[in-house]
Length: 334
Ligand SMILES: Nc1ncnc2c1ncn2[C@@H]1O[C@H](COP(=O)(O)OP(=O)(O)OP(=O)(O)O)[C@@H](O)[C@H]1O
Picture 1 (cartoon, rainbow, N blue to C red):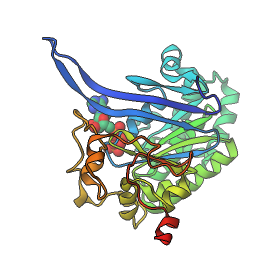
Picture 2 (cartoon, protein in one colour; picture 1 turned 180 degrees about the horizontal axis):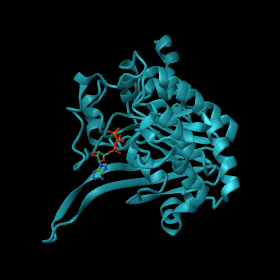
Picture 3 (cartoon, rainbow, N blue to C red; picture 1 turned 90 degrees about the vertical axis):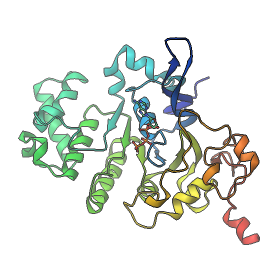
Picture 4 (cartoon, rainbow, N blue to C red; picture 1 turned 180 degrees about the vertical axis):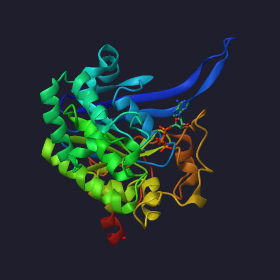
């Protein structure tokens, strides 16, 4: 039964790239980018999704907005299957769910003026006439704090921060309910990051938006999220209220991320940690994918995959861990 109280429901989603059968009927392995991910996005919240490069964040983001399709499970927006909705009529879905890309300048067509870029959704998604478009363009530029005369300029004339404001204005153009922000500030200087994050916060309140905020940068995710989902190797490692996750992580991977995040803007993992011990995505291990890097792993972890309930604190804070780190209270008691 779809959960219609959720804005988006991600239900046992899988995404395998490649794979299938060879010409001679043999089995070709595929990349398991997303495996059995289930979570919901609630109306009005900012759900942060964090994890290191390659853990499947972008794949999940693309499926949320209908740019890619799960190979298993389903994603529903207000109870409606997103992949089916995208196939039937992408425009209708795009009016409700929008995407902001990581690289602001290259996500804008270099041959088009800002006016043409922002008018496209007003024409194609909303079918607005000339005078309504003029009004809406003025509103959008004002909403993202850009001067109206910028409308006649081209993307290369803007700084990264300004270009990202235009990307945000384009996402806002059709008055969506949900915006998926895929690393929206990673390409920006730290000083500019704060301005764009503040702007996103204002817009959320002003237009009653819901955000899915994807980032490899834990300090950014902490500053914007109501709840946080931590992904590791295509699966959810932990999910819970932002405060609880940062104060009392229940997965050793989250712990590792927290321990390696002293400065804003720094990648979540020290380069020397590398990806050396990431399992083979063509052949996921039977147990916990983090076991090879985990200080608490034992034979159980290496052979059996923990469910999210295994390390749960309560029904809001779940962690896929057989031997979760102690809670603050437990530490004090010990
Ligand atoms: N089109 C594709 N074909 C084959 N494999 C893919 C494809 N897209 C993603 N993958 C693989 O799926 C896994 C998840 O990739 P994804 O880009 O979603 O991760 P990510 O967490 O967003 O990483 P990054 O932050 O580097 O973008 C990786 O192993 C990647 O190599």
